[in-house]
Length: 300
Image 1: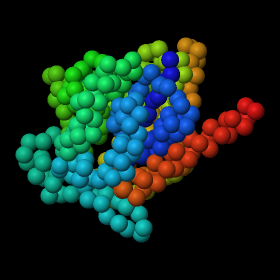
Image 2: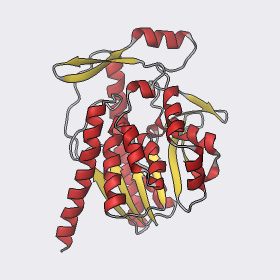
Image 3: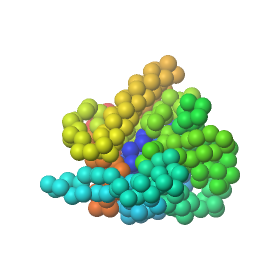
């Protein structure tokens, strides 16, 4: 069984979309299992439906307003680069109204629901393909994997949304008596889960470079310090997930084809820039094409 696994990575998901488009449309890869974490979970259903142009349109037009109904930061342009700073008014208002997080991302749930219709959900549910999203159960201190086959439409929309909720900047969701957050807090690249579900060949799209290529900029304020700390932890989680995935593949005679980002796409994946994300989608497509041409030449 062939599986497609897409890691978390916020706005960098546009690059993953381009890679997946080449694999599906040009190489005619037929996946029976799709696993995604965070931004990866947003892509999987549409890739399984082969509605790639539809999800490309969403990814290359999304803005911070599409994600946040209460945005906890402001974007500042300085020396040609974009930085984020705390939006004191929004954060204070959100905390005073009893929220547990700095920002709220209910607009993202509405976008997910508008993009993946109930009719499309039912098509997927009746197919042999399985779509699985990763979530972090903070109450039970465990990572959980939610299959489309096990839920109705509204519940699965919730799980996709939860998988993307990068707390404490986005909504902390209480569901089934537990508090849930971004799947990346537990598993950024669910390769091991794909293999445990029977995958014998995995195409894994990793939204970071294979080798660390940059030093983070000094923290400008408590908010940027917090984002730097989370980025550091998620990078370590991702590296560990990849090692575990390789180990699982070795012991189950499975093959993993890695597609790492060839360059650092952004140092802040919470910034959604239409122009950049359009370029990342195209560069993902071109990178997958170049990589597979190289493989073909080596085999010949």
